[in-house]
Amino acid sequence: MDTIQILRDLVIIIVSAKFFGLIARRLHAPQVAGEIVAGLLIGPTLFNLVQAGDFLSGMAEIGVILLMFSAGLETDIEKLKKSGLKATILACTGVAVPLVMGTILYMIFYGFAAPGSVEFIKALFIGTILTATSVSITVQVLKELGKISTDVGTTIMSAAIIDDVIGIVVLTAVLGLKDPDSNLLAVCLKTMAFFALSVVVGIGIFKAMQKMDQRWPHTRRIPIMGLALAFALAYIADKYFGVADITGAYVAGIILSSLDDSEYIDRKMDINSYMIFGPVFFASVGLQTNLRTVDITILAFSAAFVVVGLLAKVIGCGVVAKCLKYNTSDSLKIGVGMMTRGEVALIVAQRGLKADIVDSRYFTAVILLIVVSSILTPIFLKAIYASDEAKKA
Image (cartoon, rainbow, N blue to C red; front, side, top):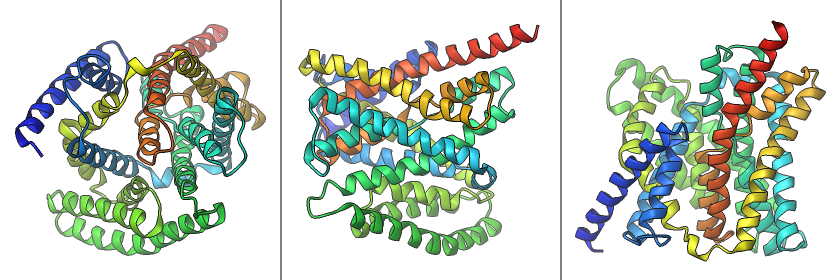
């Protein structure tokens, strides 16, 4: 390992990622999109200044774990309890419809495969990527419009939380199918065993952390122990249950999400993630993507992937919302509000690359979906609300 080379690579990654991240924010696009573009520019696609090696891959892996731990910390357990049947149904269909449509899309392009085959698992994984929802941009728009506390706003946020939980379970199950000796029943049993253990052990851990938090509030030992828990559950999940390590990190975040100092832990995690591990992860996506190898088929697939990705959430959430007695306008708001994708979709895609299920070429489609959905969602939402106001006037 060449330490000097690593230091040089980190300088290039951090500076370029932050520079293009700020440009993306100025253009009202997700900052992560800029960081991915930075990776494309400094990687094999253009200048080839940095090569993805074992060290950078390890740092990117830590970045993923920190991101998922933070996602778990931000999960509102009380909202989950109060979300009700409607949000749960919307979340389930918001995962099921994209999963099915994404799977069919891959098969249309690359041929239909028998269930259980390698190609079928690839198709299923493409559908899994589409299940992810990132409503951070939607929340920002709803806040600007003063609609965050409305029935529609609450439904979107509650459904998105449940959507993430179900999506992680689906990801875990699909990754488990990659093992040729595994079967769906065994994968599901292992996954259920991990979550059952997490509930039992999690209660004890939460009580212990709660006592620590009450005795030493806002002290560094709280986030340090939280980080140790994230790494421990990530290791246990992968090593002993065959469950994705990011699932363990996400569960660790959920366990600690009800602590009084959960936001304090999240802020401390965000410092590490924002300054180094996050940029390295998102830039590594660009480093692993070589657009020079992209052909017409991949470009056509990427365009179709974006269209299907957007429509799948609108159908899975919007149409079902209409069936749940929401009016047409509110149903459309829910569907559009749920169609944004972000870092979770990238994390899922990266996990598939690591497991050798999908090729890095498909990152092109995922990146395009994130950018397009992040641009269109605010435009569509504001237009729908403006139309409602015009009708009232």
